Amino acid sequence: MNRHVYLDNNATTPLDPDVLAAFSDALARFGNPSSMHGFGREAASLVSDARAEAAAILGAEPGEITCTSGGTESNNTVLASFAPGIPATDGVILPPPGRDEIIVSAIEHPAILETAFALRDRFGMTVHLAPVDATGRIDLAAFERLVNDKTALVSVMLANNEIGTIQDLTAISAIAHKAGAFVHTDAVQAVGKIPVDVTTLGVDYLSASGHKIHGPKGIGILWMRRGVPFAPLMHGGHQEQGRRAGTVNAPAIAALGTACRIAREQLATEARRLAGLRDRLRAGIEERISDTSINGNPDFCLPNTLNMSFRAAEGESTLLYLDLENIAVSTGSACASGSLEPSHVLLACGRSAELAHGSIRFSLGRTTSDEDIEYVLDKLPPIMARIRSMSTLR
Ligand SMILES: *Cc1c(COP(=O)(O)O)cnc(C)c1O
Image 1 (cartoon, helix red, strand yellow):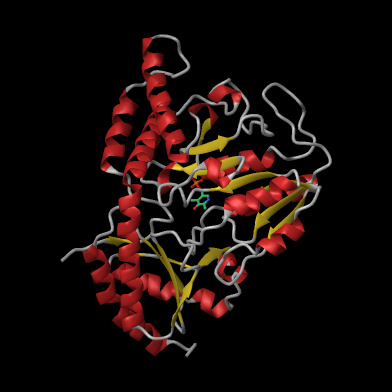
Image 2 (cartoon, rainbow, N blue to C red):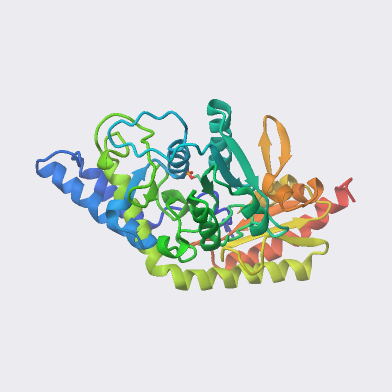
């Protein structure tokens, strides 16, 4: 038996075969969508269909969608639009004056946290980290105390990539808007896994990414409400309604559109299927392995994500032993400059460094089958027994 089990879908997802077909078909149509001749119009029509699909999965209008190089660029574009001193040139909508504070959650992806810290270091903006409870949910009372008449922007992710916790963006938006602040959500992990509707969420900006929804890497979505503060990150041509310069990546956008359509069509059935598999995985592990604990929120969690800490078992060891059995997972630590740093997400949830080091993230996806889960439940217990028998942490 030569089974390969990929349970790292929150890092990236396999390209859907139908997306690949759309991608390669569009690659052959080489026209520049900005050209007025037939070659250009052919490419432009692929882009406009894809933009409509990207809008549909968010409950938005196609004209509100800007295509970027990914979630990271979308996040950077929004936060940088609130930097002080931007000249009021063409296409720029300036933020209200006198507001130089940004609030982000303590468990944001580095694409938000590091961007916020760069704005602090370059422009002297103040960055507040909104704390979360033990399950990763924003403490709304503590958040409300951070919001004031100097708050320019609040950026809170809709769902966390490590533990899957889903935030109450509707409540967060209401609190921020009452104080005159704008609201962004990094919805990279939420889109395609749970229903996302920009009107219900009440946000002003939203980021999403192609490769987290079985599309290609290097393509993403920035949705924004009309008239909100904005400054382009990329300068040059007038592509994307002047919001993002650079020759339009028509093939990747066409692929992204197909990925959005499939994700939207399958969302309800896939969410149910994946939650069932995820719950089976959790129950199976808890039956067979002692001293485990769940990270995240059982009631507000992505259907595909299971994050567990295994006492006295370094996550890196577990990952490597699972890899020998062709099972791909990820850990709650990141190798930063040669040393293992415990996950900032798990630390923000109040986990000890030791439990954070012992955490494993299983993230399921469209290719995950019942057999995959049974295979993991077969392989993991003896691996854990072996690691623990050698562990000095015990
Ligand atoms: C993957 C990810 C990103 C980055 O998206 P890219 O398209 O890879 O730049 C941002 N935020 C979250 C929550 C992510 O999971």
